[in-house]
Image (cartoon, rainbow, N blue to C red; front, side, top):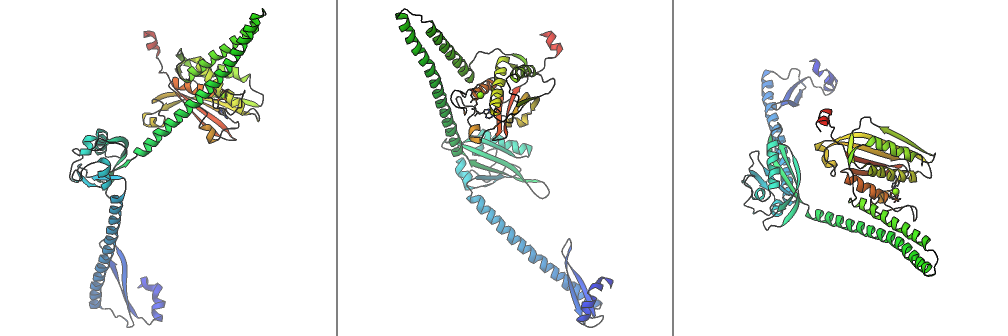
Length: 450
Ligand SMILES: Nc1ncnc2c1ncn2[C@@H]1O[C@H](COP(=O)(O)OP(=O)(O)OP(=O)(O)O)[C@@H](O)[C@H]1O
Ligand SMILES: [Mg+2]
């Protein structure tokens, strides 16, 4: 037989003269062979072959069963391990079948959602006490059953005593090998402590910012009042001596004007300044502003502009938009003062689709105009980046910066329904990105009707 050619040499060395090979098979495929050699030629006749075929069949059956048993044992061990983990985990877990009947509830779920143990297995998710007490949770479960897809949500769960817990929930279908949904798994995690800590942190940050603001305003007004007090005294003395108090009055007037300007700036930060909104071509405002600004740039700084044509309009106060641009450009210029560099301004359209709105929590979905301003200046480290929008935060030293430019820009952009963000790498440069909601185009037909 040519199929045994390759082992003929070895067989001869052992004085084997004949051999029989029988397949070991399970239902689907051959998984081995039973090979028997004999020193006599033609040792395996029809009778022997039939007997040995039976033996191979029995062996196949035995081996298959042994393997199945081993697999089952492993499966049972895996299942027990999984069950132990699910029972022990601090996350709450329930499973329900595609019809909505609850199959399993772990102890953490009972504890987290405050349900009696009897109010679980066998109950329909539609009548589940937890669903009745927490409509948001029930809607999420119902939504998953209807759409047959996973859902993730955060909601406030009331337990039996009425105590509220912040809960992170995940509801997902489980599929079998054929792709059919066999059950749904709900996992819930109590994140009350995390939420509480975030709240405290936000509150602490607010208080810190407020303290910095009060310190800054206090310093500003102390300086102004010092000038007014000193020069009013000088004026009073001059007047009593019959000499002119005009110089003192002029200085007092100047200090009062400084105070007025400072108040106007604080009002802008607090978004309470008076506004005159109108449809504005941002591209035109940017061109005019940059035209003015480019004259103040040293020759070591190159200005580049990339503006998409037909950008559309925004509803804005053009003076305030100009102010934002000037504040950002001045910072960029300062950052490139020593080494020079490139200031690049880009204007383009950007649509925020509903499904990506969560990435821009301060904005509404729809068309926006995106302005980017990139400089190749000294950049900022992470510590600085966390504070730059706070009023009176400055790294420029006394007399050079008041730390108001960016907080004013922030206030203006927020007030226009937009968002401002920053990215920076120390030693490389900085990019500011501003998004402003675009005005819907008014067709010429509508214009006529107006
Ligand atoms: N483009 C930039 N590159 C590097 N650092 C920047 C840039 N823009 C802002 N900063 C940092 O952010 C700080 C705050 O900026 P902001 O414009 O609010 O205040 P300021 O420029 O220091 O003072 P003011 O604008 O009131 O004159 C700056 O002091 C600087 O450290
Ligand atoms: Mg500035």
